Length: 551
Image (cartoon, rainbow, N blue to C red; front, side, top):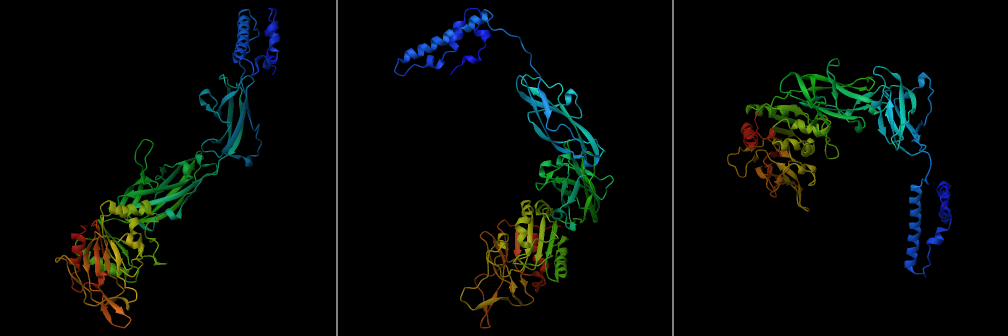
């Protein structure tokens, strides 16, 4: 390979007698450096070193005698170019403020190390460095205007730090688009709520979410009530908040704002909690939302309404009785609780009927379970749950009451036990191992409890004895899970194919207390068990003495 072609004759052709070296560089170096394998390895190495030594001596001599000559050439600045040289659009066809801009640079004596860009302000402190050759920008529109001509300037920087003194520039004719906002119907409050209400909404901007400056909420007051809601632009415009208010008294109240499903306290840039004024306890409230973009354009408002109910007790009665006697049955329970000095808050959750085995969660509950419903139920110390079917809302209790129990809550649930699958989800919540069944091949057809049957405690003589005041079919006995306590049992009977009634002895449980002692389940309808006229004493024993109920 000839290598001498890249050596200038000003180096090798000088008048100092170095023509010999000039000739050497035009030799075939491959032939000089290649020693056949058959020859001595030491000879091969010696030949190579001799040649390198000869060349090094010449270069040293050339430097001392001025053999390398030429003129110093200063660094040349780079040039910058934009992909688009100009924009010519009519006023009605201006661009969106979100624009992708691209550029490139050229350097005649080096390479491009990066770029600096500036938008509108091109003073020295306003430039931003980048190594990219394209980016998407939200070009700023002067606040209060809908159209603007925005200057974008870019300049290249070479490897020696020299900047293009001219750069490339372009003015973009842009028009601002109004943002939008809308509540999400599956993330708004139910008609009636207690102290916690959650709201979910979506925001959008044709110019891009980066163009959104703020989204706001106001309660009842759209003049002075607007509050900025912190939001993350990476959440694709989805907002979810909760408002928690002290609803222990009627009238105006202030709510604290919480963010997301994690229920994190919203704080200002200075670290203060964010509060929302204007909520009225004991009446219907209206929540308004809006969004504002960087140019100050304000979206249309969206709104939703809900009633804020006062909480007056530490005890909550959940009425999930689906039959027509729901209200009268509830009032029956309330009358005996009142005799104990307990006047619970009441929550009707009896909409809907079981379908395909179980019921969907009542629409009288909040639409959002976590955190809204869970934290709402945890606002009480005790829950008194009445229902006429174990396939109703009680099947969701394991999930919705998790925070209630974790905060030390106690619950009394009275629901007649019926025939359900041994794999039913209800057994994930109730402390029941199994329910009454008939061995295969038998003649038994169903369960019956006769009029006058006593419901007694198997171990506590001080426990009040109840008496059934009418004959009932379809109530099943229960067997407690390991570690739980059987509180009451009764004499269950079985109907047969032959028409006679026989005693049922496999299990006789009626009521059981959980191993944690925070839940008592009673598997009969109490309104039919006051034959001894001692219901007040029974509820005192079960709710007050065993579960610590107090108003």
